[in-house]
Image (tube, rainbow, N blue to C red; front, side, top):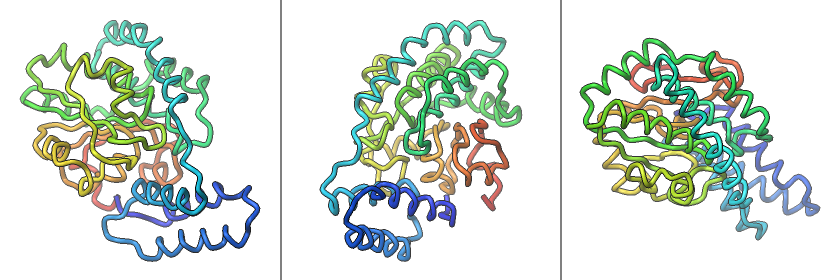
Length: 294
């Protein structure tokens, strides 16, 4: 996805907020000048998630402070969703279209995003889940998706956040039931990136017992094709169908022309404007059918 003024302002505001309480104004000014200098020398393949990772490293180098550790929060939200897993699975299996319901729950799980949201509230998450049976996917895209699954031999699932990965697991359970010959591979982040799911989360949530899971080889909060592992890149490029979760994956992948179905909630001003959507409105769109001007 092309960078835009909204994304640049967001990057600047995030960095300014992180150092806001620090007392050394001279050092703060120099730090923000470094940030702005980088933003005035953008490369063609730069994107918001990769810039955020770059600035996190600059922050640590400048201030000697490691990025926030989300380990305990990740465990907390993984367990919250694990406690709901079987209840949600029953709701899915009792619905008129289990696959659609599973995808809707998975999309709602995209709310668990500490990088995009200043406050992630369990009550709001549970409320969104409760309203899940009133939601639907885009009919035309879902029809395309189901038709492609009939003949597809391979599917790659790109995860996003902790907790959300449990709901991704529900989608995969349904896919395995309905398409037993479909080869499903899951790709998580290779190293910690905010509260994004890594191999530790996949193991905790039991996903590794269901399908093969690999890390993508880097710590960017997305799937930045030029910088992921060769194994991950090969799986993605050779997949018949790809499910991509979250805004970060969209930001790093959009424009690649692969057969990707993006599943996410609109959580920031730019995404709401781009898709003419309300906050937390769910999207299910295909890379090949998204208007070229987005």
